[in-house]
Image (tube, rainbow, N blue to C red):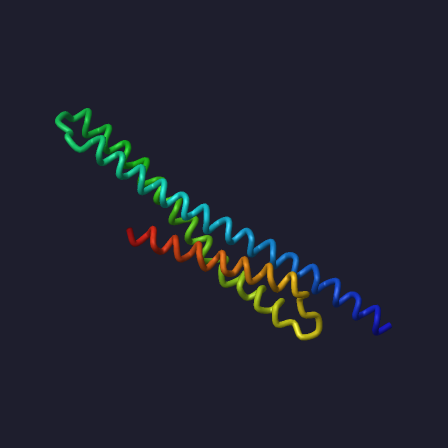
Amino acid sequence: MASNRAKKLLHKSTVLQAEMLEELQALVKSIERAETLLTELKQDTEEMNAKHQHRRTTREDIAYLEELLKCAKKKLAWEKQMEGVAKRTPEVLAKVSAAMNDATNPPEPPVRVAVLDLLQTVQGAMGRLDAAKAD
């Protein structure tokens, strides 16, 4: 009976580890999407400012303001994306910590390596995102 219970705990632990890896990968993708969106936003803003640098008429002012509104909407989408990342990150890291510190069913070495790689990817992406925000 005890071995059946141990098998169930092992299975549950394996499922939790797989879910943790999936969530960590999703977090990486979300951060990378936010980084891409921020880069596009900066590029669009620079192009818009260069294009409308010498406005002389009201029509040109309106065209500039319409493009500025598009950039503002894109920035709002980026901010929402960042809020989601900020909200999800602690939850995902708590799952990672719980799975990695499981004394009864610790993750296998390949899982540990995958988690380490993903955490390094998160760290690198966050660094690039912070650098992009600072520019």
